[in-house]
Image (cartoon, rainbow, N blue to C red):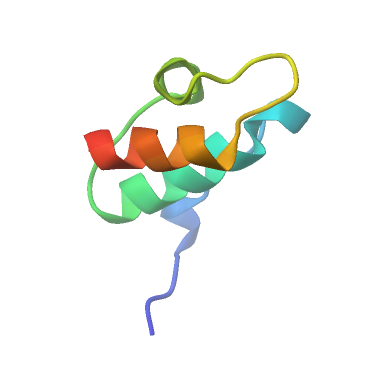
Length: 62
C-alpha cells in the first residue's frame, strides 16, 4: 500500500480546487511538480469546479 507523506500534500486554495489538488498530490508522488493554476487550465476548471472527465484527461497528459 502506498502512503502519501506530508511533502506530497497540496492544500486547496478554494472549493473549486478539490479535484486538481488531488491530482497534484498524485503527480507529486511520481515526481511531477505543477501549480494548481496550471492544472486548472489543463483540467478545464470553471466556476463550478472540475468535472471528473477533466481530471481524467489532465492526468492522461502526464
